Length: 161
Image 1 (cartoon, rainbow, N blue to C red):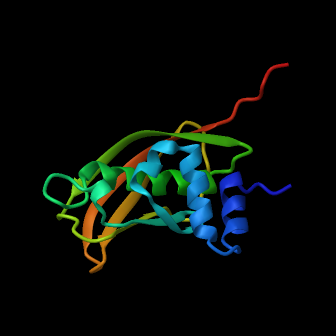
Image 2: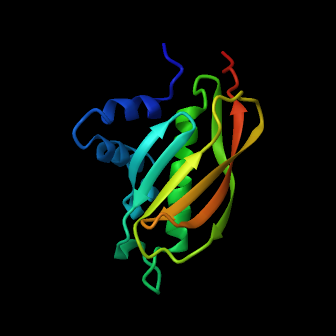
Image 3: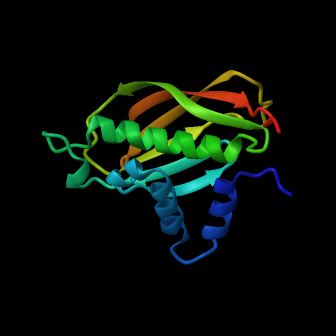
């Protein structure tokens, strides 16, 4: 049996289908419903990498008509979480978000694409703080937001019988 996560297995299955990225994104948003509020679209997923986009639409706007700061944080957390879930060896380790540091560099007045990426391959430790850098770009390819999301990685404990 493969040591690939269910998320990565699902991604590889769905991406071969018509509208596969859309279907995969719907599954992610069903599992974590709050992400659905911004209607994201996962573009790519592989070990150590995830990218997704959010359209510039009214539902994610703030009072000045640009993409809200919290929508940017949500997109960053979506990419980081999906990437970590697809990358951490699911049989031996688990993860949970621990903290986020966000930097708003410019108003976001276009669609926005997030990229979460960590160097691969890597060794997975127990009780490790993994800092996942996430960058958001507007459609002019300008960096508009950065975040460092700390994921707490631990080894799974064996269940006592």
